[in-house]
Length: 373
Image (cartoon, rainbow, N blue to C red; front, side):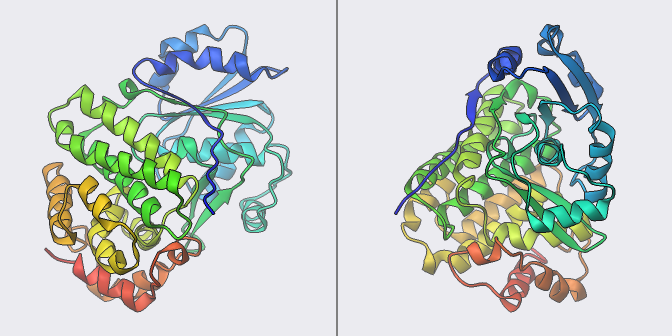
């Protein structure tokens, strides 16, 4: 049985961010209190924010990548008294994840980061305390269309997920003009992250026919237009924004699989940007998964690769052309720590969503294949 569900109103295209005041009016909250969470203060000068006279607006900057439990708790503490009924999150995946997480925390009495940890472990969020609107400024995470958020916990050496099926965004405003100023490294790594979301959605154990169709189109858009990022092409940025949104809609119903599971400790312990980490794993995981994937041919066609070897060459080329390392050794990973990275790469909800069984031993072999060129 195929089941697909996603209630997010997606507004996509150049200038779509200008619809923000209209969307806020459409939500129709009585108190009209809006928290705007952004990557930097320059965002607050965008024209859409100058048309919000009828709202009480609180502006906060959040600049951490890979937000931790402590950082999320600090933002909750700063904004809980304001008690917004809508959160507008403008930025990359980290900002969107914090914004949507806050909606699950408002109305709760949390007096410490440990209390927040306990809430995440119980997953007892109930009805969110606020609506949220996602405005991505990078093309990669698809967080604007999913109901979960990644929150890191290096103190406990785990990656946590805040998941609430009542917490889909009211709307996603996907405006490629906001992403056009991204540094090349970020543009490329976030695009490859979006491609990984789509590929993993295609072969996930929980996949369905709608997600597979969205995933194939997302992969095709991204891989056909990645070269344009190196030329600063606005059309390429439009394709990345659209591809990322479609990938988000795809994996919002399927979650991700082995690539993401294995990548988390590489990001947490070595600071490898998430998009780079997960993209290096695509080819070897594709090789491992091939026997368990139905209709592999359409996926390879969308990737523009005849098989894992050609895909690995393409991804390494994109990373190196954008000024990024393309092997674990180049990122500074210690070979003797691969067994521990493999053990930590068995992430519940991701590793067990892979189409073929993975073990720590299999992961270690995969890490060996991407350790050197």
